[in-house]
Image (cartoon, rainbow, N blue to C red; front, side, top):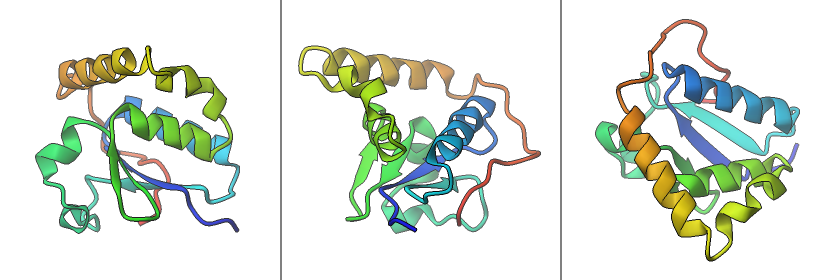
Length: 128
């Protein structure tokens, strides 16, 4: 099994977040390149990554093998790259487009925070 390339911190009670996480696991096909952790789990220790609960819920976060924390669109870029679909989001990193996509994600995250209906049953498969 390969080493993981990104650990994505997800809100397991958010259906939109769960769908994206399940897609990543499906695209990973058991290779172990992406690891998911539910920020709502009692086993999750946000302080380990220097985050508060509020920060973790504001936008998506990812942890790199080096321990560095990435946020927002960069998490999506790295997650899709880890599962072999980096080409899909490559344009979002192009110098002229990157600021637009980064700003667009921040706007979406701000507007959707607390507005997406939440569920507690059937959490996505996470590695804790």
